[in-house]
Amino acid sequence: MADDAAPMGMGAGNTEARRLASLGALGPVTPQFAPAADVAAGGVLLAIPALVSCGLLHHLTKHLALPRGYYSLPSIMLLLACMALARVKSVELLRYSAPGEWGKLLGLDRIPEVRTLRKKIELVAGKNPSAQWSAALCQQWMASDPVSAGVAYVDGHVRVYHGQQTLLPRHYVARQRLCLRATTDYWVNALDGQPFFVVSKAVDPGLLTVLEDDIIPRLLNEIPGQPSAEQLAANPLLHRFTLVFDREGYSPRSWLARKQDRIACLSYHKYPGADWPAQEFSLHMVHLAGGQTVEMELAERGTYAGDTLWVREIRRRSTGGHQTAVLSTDYGTEMAVLARQMFARWSQENFFKYMLEHFGLDHLIDHQTEPLPDHTLVVNPAYRELDAQVRRLTGQRGHKRAAFGALGLEGPIEPKKVEHWQQRKGDLQEELAQIEEQLGEIKARRKQTPKRVAIGTLPAEQRFQRLSTASKHFIDTIKMIAYRAESAMAHVLRDKMSRHDDARRLLQAIYRTEADLVPDLQSKTLTVRLHHLANHSADEAIRHLCAELNATAMLFPQTDLRLVYELVS
Image (cartoon, rainbow, N blue to C red; front, side):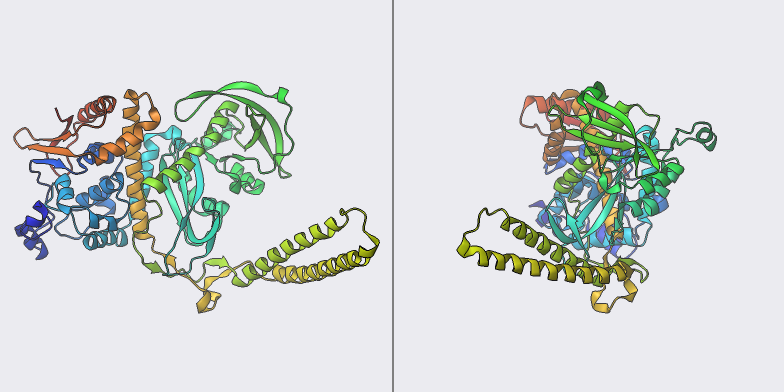
């Protein structure tokens, strides 16, 4: 192979530049493209305009830096984004890819080996404020679509950890129905599922606390187009923006505080009560986030959440008669619009599922840990043990009560079995009394035990460390950019596809497809000729995509070569 035949092995053919870069006399190198045929995964180059437009290379000089070396920061960023789109879900998987082939896609002799790439990620994320870069991109995304930014979807994603570096607290993982060691990431997304930012918590304080401490302060500063103080004073029903979350965020006390901040809340009713009469519902046309328009049977009442907060309760009635109750402190928006906003929450759930399956959302970037501050509050191990005992005894009590009640349902007792029946009933009654006594004692001890304590007060064997977050936050931001870029490309493809749901599948096929690279230094173009796919309809959709991409006249980063996309004739 050409990789093996390179002077320095495995594709490293630019020997002179590499020697000078190793001595600190040169670097970074600029991309230099050569004609190449049948380059594996060459179709991923069709994503370059979308990646750049979504901010992959924006704000780098201000927020990120890389020490002088052979590889430039833009080349590393492009490699990581293209890896995400090509479904190379971790850096380790590059061990099984031809480095020279990847190098051809980026105008390099080869990409860095796994160890080098890990070091580059650590240098970029560890010594530079990657969180500030992510925040700058978030503001850019919100400013580009202020209408969508005015409705923020917040939900937690439990990120399971199977390693042995530290004993993280256990979390309930709904998708696996197990309690596993994990951390929690709280994501903020738009109406259509597009991600804005993520907040990682090694010790999960709960959605309401994260909203109060981390998310709302950012949204107040970053969401564009918020009403002015004069507008809010003139209209008591006006709000700054809307927060949408599931039943975990149900808290009338918290909602009342948000109402005073002029922030609307929208969530499912945690205690909906009896169904409403069917005659209260009427048909409404609801425009969904995906562009479809559907009919929904909706009804509305005013009600109290808790004792003091007056809210709107909106119910949707399905064709089968099931009613879904929604509460809102947005008092001015039409009922159909609120229904659209609430039921679009599944876009965020679909985002989690898609990112897990296709972008390796839970994959570890590194295996480093770092200590938690001593003042960090964690669940008290003593409280956890007492709580477990209460749960266990409560379960035993339920079983004993069921057995005791069943004795009275056995019908007439034969005279010769009366004594045995009485003995069984007496034994169960005595066991119930013992359980009640133990339960009362343990509940009293639990009440006297603080639920949370500072981790610095725990014995060394009960403490744990958190997973390193710098590299993870950096890679998560690149994955957000990749997802946004793919979404933009899917939107273009849907113009020529009868089955809109297949747009992302077609893009996955495009990213894996071979392509020919034809640089023309005189006309300053880099032509990417994608090989044909399996059928004519896919080729027609790709031609449409190529035409839209060519209209952007995008230059390949760090070069003066204009990208030209076409299908092999």
